[in-house]
Amino acid sequence: MTVAEKNRTIYSSVPMQIFIINSIKQPMLDGVEVIFNPDASKITKLRAANQLWKAFQAISKLPEPTVENTWHPNSHILIGLRDWLFERCFLSEKRNGFIRRLFNFVIILYELDPPWRWVIDSLKDEAFKKKWKLRGYQDTWIDKYTWWRDK
Amino acid sequence: MKLQNQDIWLAYPKLVQLSKIKFPVKVGLGIAKLLITLQQPYVAIERERIKLVNHYGVVDTEKKTVTVDQSSPEYGDYSVEFGQLLSTYWDDEFQFERVKLPEQITVTCGSCGKKTNINFIVDPQVLLPLEEKFVGLQDGS
Image (tube, rainbow over all chains, first blue to last red):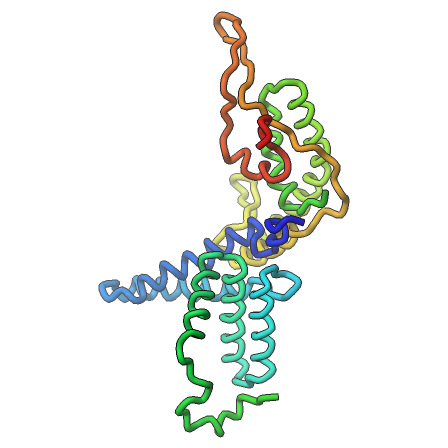
């Protein structure tokens, strides 16, 4: 099996590519552009918010990334990190649901979109070169984080 | 060779387009063999796609068509199921040879009847789903 063939997953199939571009990426790009434009009218912003909401709903239609339906080794690491997180993070169902959807979308972006992969990898590499502080740095509330349970 | 349903579904209509061009017999035969090999799997995949369209689509009584509108809530489910169908590998192994297309083809002049070689011009969109597995150039590329 060639590298190109190995990279073919459900996310790179023609219908999924069309769906991701037309129903998620493009409306998100357009919607964010309008919402953060100070000159845009309230009605235009409302329409953009509706567009963003639809795009967000469309994300939930995407199949959840798994080791079986992805190819990139780093996607597999991200999938492992997602599962690791939800074994420890016990926020409300709504919040966890939101985080999970967002996380899954980032994994899918990483999996199928080489420029996004490049951006995410660059940020990760750069962050490790900096003096990144450990979790809980100067946070006095950590003993009240009952929603987080380390194993 | 194993083929993904997407390879078959994208390639077959393009091969049909290529088959309408007059080629030297060896090339024509190669294309015909490819068409025969892919026809039955293509029809089966297309049948499944039509089932999905009928399931998720809306009937337009005026045009007498069924379409899945991109702005409809069902479009996501349709895309996922169709994506699953296309990313699946066809069960059987395929045996075929890559067809080597000529750079030039011989045509007969409509007015004088003289035969001349002309550069074979084809839309890149036709070749795109074919170049990886199905067709190449006679110079070896």
